[in-house]
Length: 494
Image 1 (cartoon, rainbow, N blue to C red):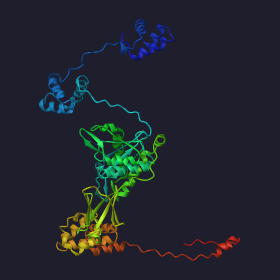
Image 2 (image 1 turned 60 degrees about the horizontal axis):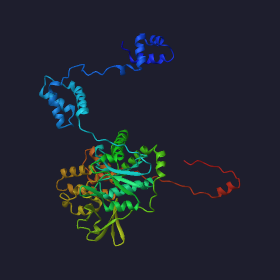
Image 3 (image 1 turned 90 degrees about the vertical axis):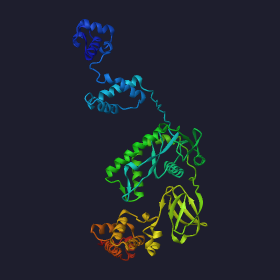
Image 4 (image 1 turned 180 degrees about the horizontal axis):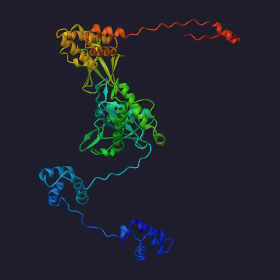
């Protein structure tokens, strides 16, 4: 007689407190069967013999040799790919409903004949031993600033043990962004780990034969913090596994919060950075206990930041632009022809004439262009004909609506449209860009041409009068009478 697993469990249970006959009766088996199971002390699944035959025919048996020849040559082939090939070759024999069966056959073949797989070795994380950093691209999240696409990266820093993390917005995997991101992170943390791990990015390493070694710039930077650099082996990104996994989780959190926010557009870059800080704080919430453990092993920060600007001489061109670190900036026209010194910091560029700092500008990525229309528009207005083919014309549209205004004006008046637009742009330079932008939107909604006169009218109408506030002169004698205990009558002034 064959018993179920439940019957065997009942039999074994009651055999310990009753005799064989009572236990067999409670389990619903014969005394003879009970004797066999009690004698061998084995459960049903252990007594059953293994089955070596199939309960149904293999639908792929006739073509299996051909299928396995594909797998031997390309073990990474997916069952769906082969299934689609079989259906195309034998349309009357196979259908997509057999995909799950083919997947099971693939799994069995790979278990018996497949190639060796790489083994991952989980590491024991020690508090305060190491920090990690890497870059992650945010472009797939479709974030915009003032409705303009904002392609960028995040420098992502974390402590593997506590999972504490912080991020910085950057535009390239350069040494400047690496140093700036690391420095921001450790000063925000308030301490440094003895070791910092990166992958083999060019900002920190360079090729030496078949291997890579750390750059002097990166070694000198970390020596300021008394930190030892480390890196994973080339091509083995999983060795930096903690930060790699955190990339996906952090970006997913940002994506979820953007959906909750209802918009992926931010008025300014500072607004976007503030949003990232909130996401970062939310993710770090609850990591305080482990972070406290880390602090016991972390090292103190140096007394000062690492601050070694690169100084390069430059000359302002006749077009009122300069080239700094392969990037182009506009400057006020009063500097044309002067020889200046550019102090290049990780996040900004400062222009010096002698020992006087004339201008400070946010640093832009190599090859980028930053033309401030306020530096140019007054001079272009004197020569409006130069605007149509001006090399940096596209940078003189601060927002999309300004480009729309330019197109509308030049279409209405091909000969004078450039000048009309430059008049609007100059008015913007001396007033408020946001206000002019809103006025242009209103004019387009009303299907009116965005001439300067119309823009000024809307700006003037939107200016609310300054309220007149009357403050009565205080009689200090009231305080003297109050101190002397005299009654003081108060009235609420509306």
